[in-house]
Amino acid sequence: MGDVFQAPAQPRIPVRSATDEQLFFPVRRVYCVGRNFAEHAREMGAAVPTSAADRGRPVFFLKPADALVLDGVVPYPRGTRELHHEVELVVALGKDAPPGVLDPKVAMPLVFGYGIGLDLTRRDLQAAAKAKGLPWDTGKAFDHCAPVSALVPAAEVGDLAARSLSLQVNGETRQHGAFADLVWDVPEILHELSRLYALRAGDLVFMGTPAGVGPMQPGDRFLARLDNVIELQGEIIQDAHSG
Ligand code: MN
Image (cartoon, rainbow, N blue to C red):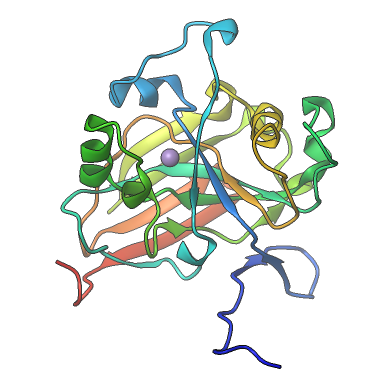
């Protein structure tokens, strides 16, 4: 009775906390939201909702959990000439959702904490797929496509609506967005996800990016911030096997 090979280790994200004990967050799934800031939807050429009633439904996709990057070092991916950054809030669920569709009013107690991450995108592959009406998977879900910071317990972040996120590349600010401008906030996104999936402890949700997405090259250094609460630093390195 045994496995035919050694199972890969489950990704475990360090938790930043005031206590001495180092805790980790074991990851189950990585959900992502598309077009959750109106200005980004506009820059991607998508329809921009003009009111809450006009929002339709959020766009969801997934990344493989083993694509998370915990040390900030991202090899430039193979198969693309257009690697784009998308800085995003990452919501980490510490509890299973109750059975059925989740009421937004009881969604927040499921949230363990927050991080900040990059939804790295092979934009050329995504654009080609979109143009043909094909799935985006190769543009969004690939090795090393999800660098993420340590997680901070929700109580230390406080009211998200008062906070903002930003991204610098090589010291230049590329993206900035206020969470008050999210098309769907965290409880609404958890509600919408629960209409499609059973949410569990260990699930992450990348909440969508503000305007200003753009390319990165090998040698570029990135610094993402959620105000002065959470920081993610890293770099794109040349992958000897890409091309
Ligand atoms: Mn995104």
